[in-house]
Amino acid sequence: MGGTPGWACIAPVSVAPRCQRQGVGHALMQGALATLQAQGHGGVVILGDPAYYGRFGLVADAARHIPGVPAEYVLSRPFSSPAPTGEIRFAPAFGPV
Image (tube, rainbow, N blue to C red; front, top):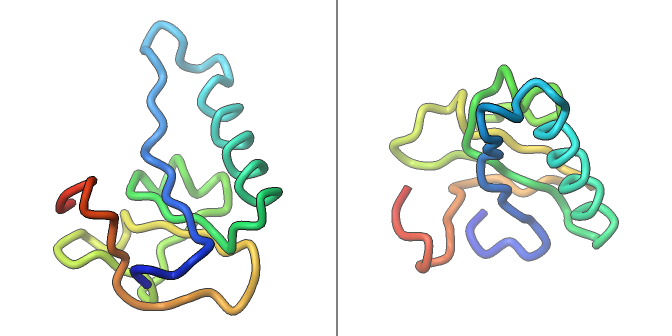
């Protein structure tokens, strides 16, 4: 999957504890997903908590994986099909996971 054009990675969303449970994280995720889809991206991947990110339609799929990372934390959501498969690789600037 590394090098697949049109897919994006959203870094885990973080909200200051004093601002949590006010819909800030939800609004950030909804905005990010809507923007990426409107820009024509094919889909999105994220490394994170499936209980949280699952509510935005991101799911673990063994077809897309990161070596050394438990499969249940590698989440993706295709915006179009067919969705690419294989190892997810990040740009060298982000270093190893």
